[in-house]
Image (cartoon, rainbow over all chains, first blue to last red):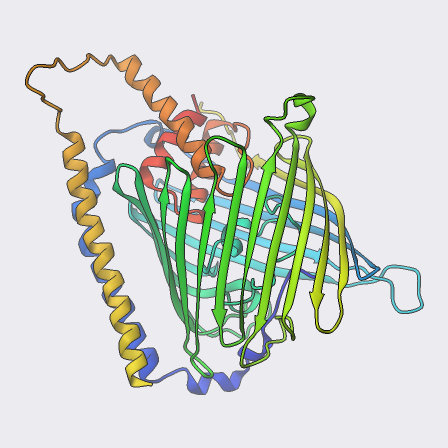
Length: 377
Length: 110
């Protein structure tokens, strides 16, 4: 199961002829109003974090190279697949307000051809994001370039191989994120406190149509907003995307995550809907750090489960299941350190075209090194 | 179709208004928190710079676990200049607030 997903239907050059129109114009105007409102709100906000200087202002950041890597073996319906993946990230800060960040993914899906025994496959290369961020003030960051589409939480936050608790993608991941899960254009985003114990985060973007190989994106606009309550460690939010090409459809979704303070449990969930289908996933993950016995070893063990369902929509999309599908997965991860872990899972997929088992086993690793002197001189 | 666009436009305009209003509220809330509490018959506790710094570190530790733990296992500490880059990256990626970022960096570079 290849993690990269492409929506080739949306990137034909013919689409360019329908990119102008009343809907796009109205949407652009509203987004402009949104930007004006944000900028207008900023002067009253700006004093919040300017009252004191601290370590942040005195430490000069240094470029960083970080990388997620993994080797996953997956048995899908009895067929083995070998999936090596390397995903390098470059972070280049400029001054106190700018950041250039990029992530590429090199991966392969090696499988034996019918009747053969050796594993064969091709190397997929993808520019996940290459963006310039400008931290305009504590409440607004302006991003231009190619960026991960901010729809739901999985694509932006949980996608990296060393972060995800289960190695398979949720069935609904392609909804609302566009081809290659990325957009090309501009984005405003940020987070701020509306009360001492309530944080609001948002992201709004406009993406242009791109048919360039490895840079493909749809012409679309959308936003995501969430509320995070730090005390109960609960976040809820919603996302919306309006496609400004083809049939100009909408997609929307909701997300929630909760880490109760009393127990080492993470519960994450998403719901998404578009004309191509709808569905949800719920994923609890529990770290055995409170086990009464063998705590030294068991605290490194995480058990995780995911229940998900997908319901087909009016139009079939080639990156989504063609029929209604249910899937349950159970996983067991072992953290050697916070950056190296062994991952394994078993899943059972139920669909009208046939049920199948999905086994996964492998290792994931995260590297992070400074490209210069990391310590203060 | 026009009606749908109109509803969409109104929803987004409303969202813009909410953000703008929230911003103003946040500013007011901050003004309030900056005001010294002045109950009539109680003395405000003396806070030394050292205590204040310790409070910041404790708060930074809380914010670190609350924010980083939303997505992944809390990482070990990195060198200060590297940490400054990583928190900036996470500020953008995970839309962490400016205040959280500063407190987390203070805690991670102590």
